[in-house]
Length: 163
Image (cartoon, one colour):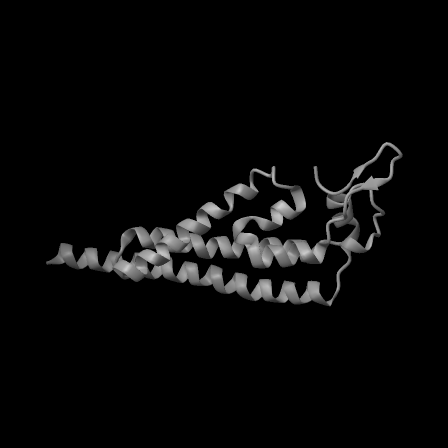
């Protein structure tokens, strides 16, 4: 499980999970699921799913560089990278906005509900601001790329039909 596990005496063992560190890890390495491993351990199967769309997105970027923007497979793959970045940033935002009691209850069970690990500080706010910025850019760029390529393809097909 997550957080501390109580010992036989009822005292928590293990280290508390820091909210600021979790938000920072989600922002920096969230596309690889590192925040999930920090909070839930290496056995978190959802964390192991995060690198797949990220790798496919990078494959799409590579295909665009190799074959150009007319590569239909790249149209599908490139947005996966943007959506992965946006999802990681969303995780960082959710972690940063969690209140202290909720954070400690969820990730630091057995510790004091007012423990410092769930506190918000200036670094938490900085991570929140950068995650909002980067997540919005990644999400909007992915949408713009997808829709632009789709509508250009529709225009090309309409021209072929009309000729």
